[in-house]
Image (cartoon, rainbow, N blue to C red; front, side, top):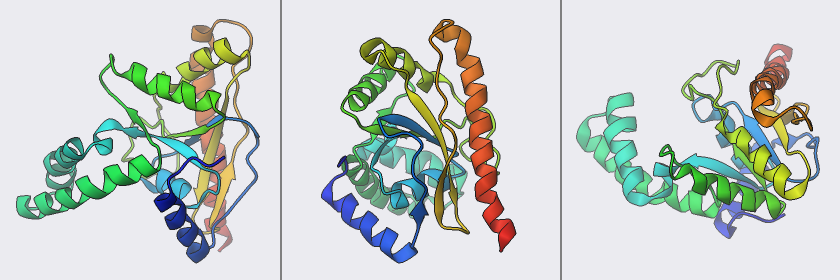
Length: 230
């Protein structure tokens, strides 16, 4: 299913051709929520660049608007996190605030709001996408700057997508762990995780989150194994 804009499709085609990445067949054929370990952008960058299927990413809302993007990069990322001098940080943030939101629009990214009232917009857009047969890409890490191979604690709010999806379709939503094997230049998948018909959603949420962490770490170890073979 075509989701992205022409600019992103062209850039992805060039990137895949030049880098030679391959992908396993996904374990599900319908709409799903794909989960990748963030690792300081390593996970989402490689999936969005090299995975042939077009997934709509969940993106922190400041990166979807020009002013908010500038503030995020200038006031935090470049000056505080990376310690850049303010003039350099200002110039770099100016460039990013033009390029990044434009790319996110072409990716048809779904903004993720930390404001509890606006998170409903995120869930509504996601549900509409799933019902159209589109799949999502989410990085659930609490510590997105963690560069370790192992996935630690994850947010669980995205699991509520199951509740609305099941209510509207009568089917359980597939949550699929994935990982990027840099040495092998391959996108890998773990076994999909589903909720069960019973018990209630809240009674399953913690257990499903635990299974997803285990699944992400299992497929992550497969990706890490490519390094050991070399």
